[in-house]
Image (tube, rainbow, N blue to C red; front, top):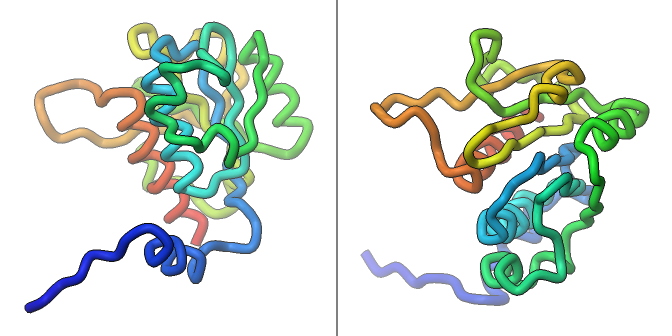
Length: 175
């Protein structure tokens, strides 16, 4: 079987056929992410997922930043983003705009991401720090705590990988 890989403009042409007219009703809040490389990777994935916006909070690196740009590959100019000093401030703004807030974290109260329903959108997804996770004060503002079920012995994924799994899982829940 012969298989020709698509390249450049051919790939974009294929994806433009299925792209919705408007960005998906998901905004992602990065709560004190420390690695610029992780943030850049999240920018790239967020743009590919065609979400509405990224909100960078606290110590999260933001553009222009050379390490961030290295993994973002030009996507910082393609996806809307904004910076807030305090994550809770960003959440309050989004709630006033009608967003439900979901924290991605493993807790006794978290539910599998597969249980999210179309009526849970528009959704703000909070992604926490690589070591400490989401700040405690953010949990008080959350409507949902969601988790990605893991089946191996390691208890967590890299934050940028977890974001990628979660965002495409959430997009599937829209339909």
